[in-house]
Structure formats: C-alpha cells, structure tokens
Image 1 (cartoon, one colour):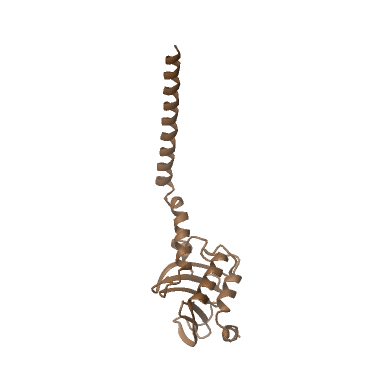
Image 2 (cartoon, one colour):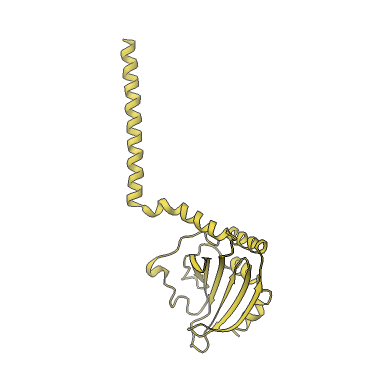
Length: 200
C-alpha cells in the first residue's frame, strides 16, 4: 500500500513538472511569434551601448542641429563630430548643406572615453529608433530646432535618435536634449561663438 502511494506521488510530481514545462515552452514560443521585437530589446540597447563606449579609431559620435525652416538663403545648420582622434564643428547654409565654416581640433582616446561615458550616463542611446513615417524628420518643428544624435562605425551609422525643441515633436530620444548638447558643444571651445552667429 505504501509503495502504491509512493508511485502515485511520484507520478503526480512528474505530471505537474511536465505540465509546467509545457506551459513555459508554449508561452516562450508564443512571445517570440507574436512579440518578436520585445525579445530583442535588451540586446539592441546593449549593442548600442557597446558601440557608443568603444574607443577604437573608426568610432565617432555626431550631433547635427537643424535650425528653423526658412528661405534657402537664410537656412542654417551645424554638426559636431567627435572621434578618438579629432573634434570637428562644421556650419552650413542652405538646404543643400553648403559648408560655411569649420573648426577642426585634435583629440585623444582618454578624452574621447570620458565624453562617450558621460553621454552614456546621460542616456544618449537608451531608446529604440523609430520606423517608417514616425522616423521622417522632414518638416518637423518648423519654427524650432531638430537635434539628431548618431553613433558611427567606419562612417556608417550604427544608431540614430532625434528630438526637437517643439513639444509636439519629441522624436525617438527619450531623455532631455540639453545635457547632451551641452556635453558636445563643450568639446569645441569656440563653438558658442561660432554657433551664435548662425541665427542672429
């Protein structure tokens, strides 16, 4: 009688274990099929963080700022690109992006490392890129400024996020833009003066 009870108990435990495992497998497979993007979120964030923090020579961070949408003659924008070897501020006029000024400066790996770790701490890439029409920046925030932030690897964009100064066009950047802009502008000592001339 005791052995019968032992066998029944073992059978019950085995059956419950099989049922629990089956439910877990079905839930996992269902999540992959119906929510494929959710399973990749962590790896995407980790990958972009790794790309941001890399200090190899072919890496770069870039900020592009577009001014208000006005006549071609009056339209201005600027770009700051930082690599482990150089820092460059370039200003442009017109929608075709004609360069009107450039401030090239040298850089070094320790300085670049401090910058990218500061950008990472400020949450620069802690968001997912938008897709389709949601990622179309044409015409957004016509009276304000558009800010684009990119991580580059061998001149190819690894990840790009954007936001604007307009409250109704927040874009894909999920953090405050001011600390990021401040960090990048301070990489070029004369940038405030140069940028200030663009929208006088």
